[in-house]
Amino acid sequence: MQGQQVLLFTSEKLAAVLLFLMKGLSLFTVGKYLEKQIPKLQLRGTIDDAVMMFTTQKKREESTTNKMKILYVEDNLANLALVERIAVMGSHDVVNATSAEAALQSLHQEPPDLLLVDIRLDGELDGIDFISSVRRQGIRIPVIVITAYDVGGQRERCFAAGCDEYYPKPINVKELQRVFERYIV
Image (tube, rainbow, N blue to C red; front, side):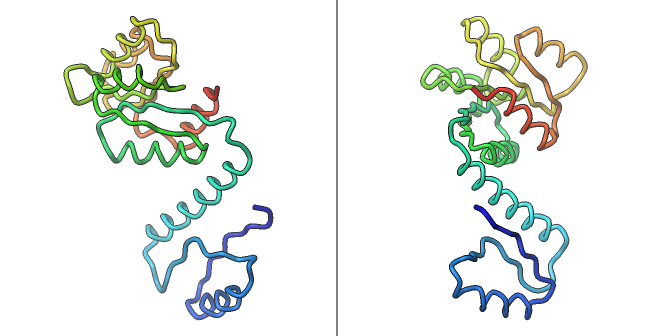
């Protein structure tokens, strides 16, 4: 990992020449690259991916002892993908359940270190019902609510059910990383 750098080329010809010269050297590898003129959004996405790859590799090399298993109770695949990407940066594993019923089953099969819960879920039970059920069973795993369903009284109902922290969506990436760091076992 020592000495790694991210290179951005402003010219396709410059990139081609330098990459050709670097191919013979074992010091360089190309993880991500772009060609020609690109939209700003695509550039931002590629830079974010490259930084995530770098960060993930660095964290894996530093330690795997701070790895958590996170059960994310969420029925929206886009939200799941985002949380998984953030968790991977910290070398954590994410298991997904799309309903409270599936989460309860998963919880008993392989207990996680942390529960992330959305309020609105597929199935009979919502996130608050799930949290109440977990706490009634005497399970003391930390519960973090992350929800877009942030209407009057929801926050208070979540804490009354037994959640430890509550965040409205969209949650900031750095904030979620700090949440994970607080609960590392």
